[in-house]
Every structure is written in structure tokens, then in C-alpha cells.
Length: 351
Ligand code: ADP
Image (cartoon, rainbow, N blue to C red; front, side, top):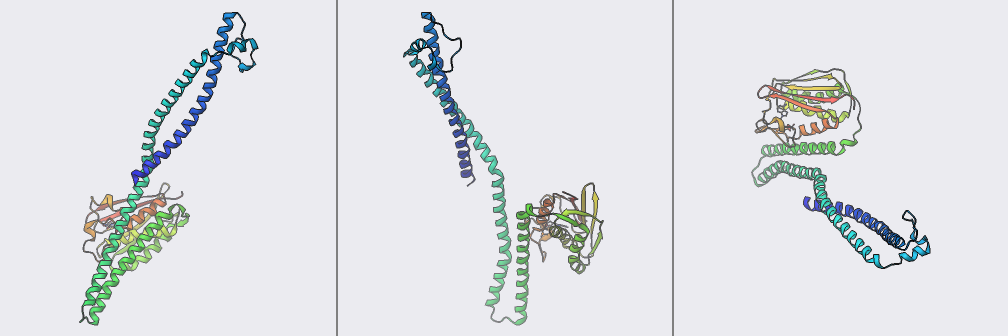
């Protein structure tokens, strides 16, 4: 598909260039032929006039038709017509040659440019394809689990109430997974699609962080994890809901990947024209080889999710990264396996 589109675009580029070039050539041909005819005629007139001793104007007159009738007659010769025809023919060949060279050069340049123009589209298309394939794969896992468990339950004629409850509970967990996945997908598409249209207002960063942390307090308490806040008063230009979503991802991960009894510290400060948010945990840490990929869609650092009840879909950090991009910010991560991770987010105070 990409190659067909590239060829079509090349053809359009070449067509436009050749239309312009051919029109110019036609105009040049007409003007030059007219000038040639005039000059040839004048050369004949001057030559003959000299031979028979008649005076001629010093410069080539604009209009040979207004010449002295005596000189006019001298110009009525067929002798130079053949030479003129030959000159016109040669000039036409030259123009065709030049246009062929233009066609060749513009064809190659257009093919190259069409490739360059289509490259980002091709990349986006491939990314989209990969995303759809990954999303379908992720959707299929809980759906298959649901289907299998329901089929087994249906086949079991002696199933008691307690057993049925267990099946329903397990099914509900799968449904919850599906709901989380679709929520993540929706958030991702909302942030990527509407990124440019988001209106950024003055936002109280501390208030946003406190709201996000409040919602995760129960989760932290269940795991006996202390959430430590050290917030400075900072206002920045941003989108409140997206920023809350972004903070939730980092804090939720910090809680998820920190064993019970650990600590998660969320702090803010300003640094030059940036607001700096740090989310540090005393969790399992991230292996060095995983660090470059954790912000990729559907990427899960293997060791951290295998065997977990709530493995996550590997979408949280990519959503967070999109939101940070939307605010023209940066994110960095420092992590040591077994000791913990620190995510450092820098957002410009004003855009
Ligand atoms: P997930 O839904 O799997 O948490 P994310 O995109 O939020 O997806 O994170 C991608 C991966 O990065 C996770 O699977 C995990 O391996 C790793 N990760 C993210 N945050 C942390 C953290 N605070 N501590 C350890 N590993 C983390």
C-alpha cells in the first residue's frame, strides 16, 4: 500500500512539474521563434541593402513591417526561410531534450520526496497496526478465561451454590480486567487524539496531587504502604484532569510495585522555569534492560508482573508520557533492582 501511494504521489509531483515546465517551454518557443524570424529577416535586409548601397537603420527595428518599402522588398526573400525553419526545429529538439532531463531529474527527486513525505504516515500506520494487534491480544486473554470458566461451569451438573459463587467471582475479576483495559485504551486515545485541542489553564499542582493521592490512600493502607507528601505551592499551565490522571499512574505503580511495609514519597519543587514532581518508592525496582522500554505501549517488565493477581496492561506509563508530552514536559527514571524507583517529571510552569 505504501509503495502504491508513493508511486501515485510521485506521479502527481512529476505531472505538476512537467505541466509547468511544458507551459514555460511553449511560451519560450513562441517568443524565441518570433525573435529568430525577426533577426533572420533583418540580417538579410542589412546584407542586401549594403550590397546595393541603400542605408538601413543602425538598430534592429521593433516592427519590420514599418520599414521603408524599398527595404521591405529586400526582406521578401525565401532564401533565409529554410535556415529559419532549421533553427526552429533545432530549438524545438533542444527544448524536448531539456524537458526530458527535467522529467528524469524531477522523477527521481519526486520519488525521493514522496518517500520522505509518506514516512511519518507509514510509521503512524505501522504503530496503529501494532497497537490494534496488541490491544486485541490483551482483550482476548480475559475473554478466553471468561469463556472457558463459563463453559466448564455449564458442563458441571453437580455444581453447588458455593462453587457457582466462586466462578462468578473469578468471572467478575476478568470483567474488571476488561473494564480497566478499555478505560486505559480510551484514556490513551483521548489524550493522543485531543492533545492539540486541550485548553491549558492555571492549575494548583498541590491540589491536583492531593486529589490523586487521596483516591489511592485506601490501596496503600491495604498494603501497609506509607504515602509521604512533600509539596511546594506551585501553579502551572496545564489540564487538571490529565495531570491528575498522570500523577495517579505514577503513584498507583509505586504502590503496586512496592512490597507491603514500604514507602512512597511524592514531592514537588520548582527548578528554573519547571515544576519538578518526584515519585519515589522503596519497591522492587526496574532492571536496566527494561528501563528504555517501560514507556512503550503494552510493555511490562517481565519479572514484575508474572504471577501477579493484577498484572496491569503495560499502558499506564504510556498514558502518563502522552500527558507529559501534551504539557511539553519530560520524564526521567532512576531505578535499582530490589531497592526502588524514582520517577522525575518536569513540567514547564508556563507555556
Ligand atoms: P502496568 O499496567 O504493567 O503497570 P505501566 O505502563 O504502568 O504498566 O508500567 C510498565 C512497566 O514498568 C510495568 O509493567 C512495570 O514492570 C514497570 N514499572 C512501572 N512503574 C514501576 C515502579 N514504580 N516500580 C517498578 N516497576 C515499575
